[in-house]
Length: 154
Image (cartoon, rainbow, N blue to C red; front, side):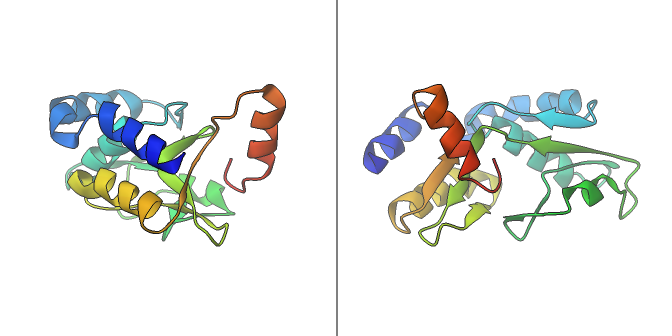
């Protein structure tokens, strides 16, 4: 199943350079919201956030409440402005995301890498390290609810 998922994602998910020209406009749109809820599993929102947050002149930051790859228990503190920020938004992925994984140890983490290497890093985590993508994809309502209850992040 893991191989099928990797193949499917490789087959349909765009590479960063294919959508690069859209990232700034996506960032400029989503930064208008105090809270962003993404129900998509793809990396487009993630890449747009990286693009906007990397701009030295941008005084608005979008935060996902992860610290060193781990979701913060006290996520509300991320609403606090730091380092010259004028505004901030928080983003959440309540159905999961390709960049979120469950390691063999059952710990959940956010996978990080330079924008152009993120997909490759995700594939590597899945294939070589045995991580499982953290997103809700079960069939029935009951199965979905069980998956959510079994996840710290979701």
